[in-house]
Image 1 (cartoon, rainbow, N blue to C red):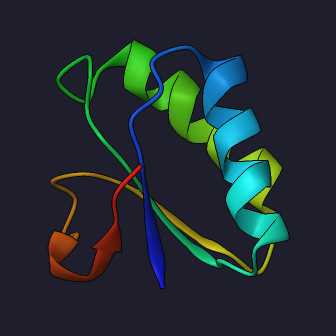
Image 2 (cartoon, one colour):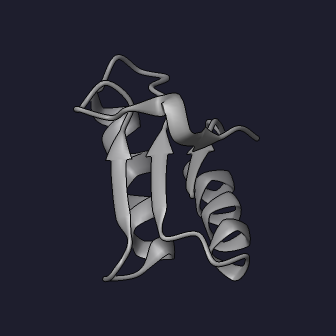
Length: 72
């Protein structure tokens, strides 16, 4: 299962990722909100920190296939 994270603020991204992790999700795709720039990189860092070392975290458009993403 892959979770699709749409939160805009890094703290909200981390909260959403933690919630999905508690449900057993190990793969996350973040929707771009800043065209892949600094805002998205900050959100990506928050998601990676919250997800842990063994989880897969990527930014939408970086080779992600959203066909199996779980929508929030």
